Image 1 (cartoon, rainbow, N blue to C red):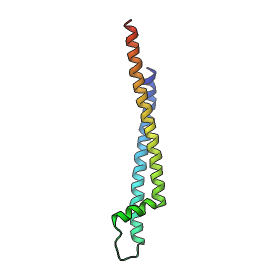
Image 2 (cartoon, one colour; image 1 turned 120 degrees about the horizontal axis):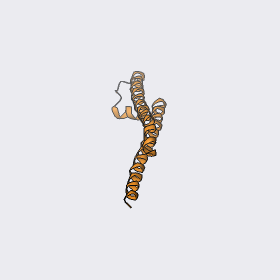
Image 3 (cartoon, rainbow, N blue to C red; image 1 turned 180 degrees about the horizontal axis):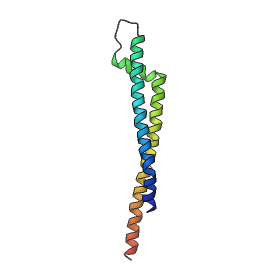
Image 4 (cartoon, one colour; image 1 turned 90 degrees about the horizontal axis):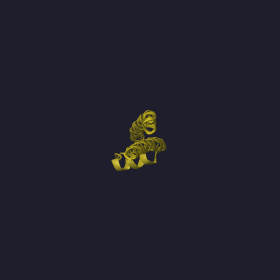
Length: 105
């Protein structure tokens, strides 16, 4: 019962952390798109920037790198909460099984 109670309390944190990770992913996509537009606008050469070159330029961009780090941090927190929730679920099943086993003695 304690495991279920902990899972219920953790459910809100799990949902919030997943939401934060999705928001960080959207932020990364927005920053990447904005920077791609800015880079193309700043380009004064006659040649069009290839997609591969743009990927490389965005990978080096400080704003994009910062957004990627933020996303990784949010995903790490979300993963931790999911692992804790899974552990609590397994603990509940284990102890419920023990309880049934001892009642049968």
